[in-house]
Length: 266
Ligand SMILES: Nc1ncnc2c1ncn2[C@@H]1O[C@H](COP(=O)(O)OP(=O)(O)OP(=O)(O)O)[C@@H](O)[C@H]1O
Ligand SMILES: [Mg+2]
Image 1 (cartoon, protein in one colour):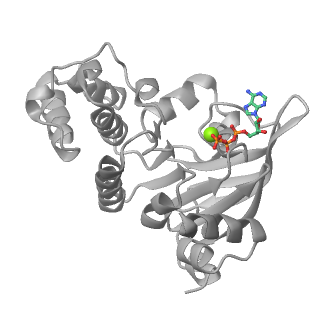
Image 2 (tube, protein in one colour):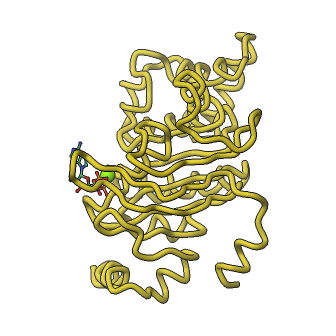
């Protein structure tokens, strides 16, 4: 199937990024980014260090307004809206409910002074859950889904290993059944066997729950496993995009060719 056929077969986009640029002073962060993300679709963003991946993700996830361009998205209640035309509280509510953000460092994405169950329960309360028994039950069920034993429910995340913290962060983000999650190097800093398990888990959850995701990584194995489509970034720009297998098996841009071949040589 070509990318065009693939796009034609999909419902209207969840996220639409139009001519987005971000400058740090006169330094380019990312430049003229355009793409659409569809419900349930996983988009990978790859590129060398300093290519603008995190800058772009920060704009897309509402953490920094772009210098120019727009991020439009299909809001559950309001329909198609400009992310940065929403009020700050509206944007924050969105991040706590219908969107999720899995940070590279789980300590940035968890409340370290709150129990594991509390971390998951807090997101449920943000979507209106009030019944203590129900919240606790759901939290326990989600810990099970990310393979954390239920007897750890009342423990602080500080007593968890790095891989467990990352799995807890994933549970915290997915429990509110978001339509979109952003992930910045979700398996970075974990050893290879833990990475493989976490990737398997993520792939299963994203597919089962039909969640759309944007995954930033420098690891091509991660996007090969998770992403339907890819953006390849270099020096702030998207230099190549397409279906993941197509881009990785038949790269067109010299930079992508280099990226793919350098991985093969390792
Ligand atoms: N706070 C900042 N102030 C000034 N320039 C910045 C800042 N953060 C990033 N930049 C610049 O913006 C460009 C893109 O950086 P960004 O952090 O988005 O890259 P990245 O692709 O996420 O890299 P990495 O893979 O190393 O995380 C780089 O040239 C970087 O030097
Ligand atoms: Mg980065």
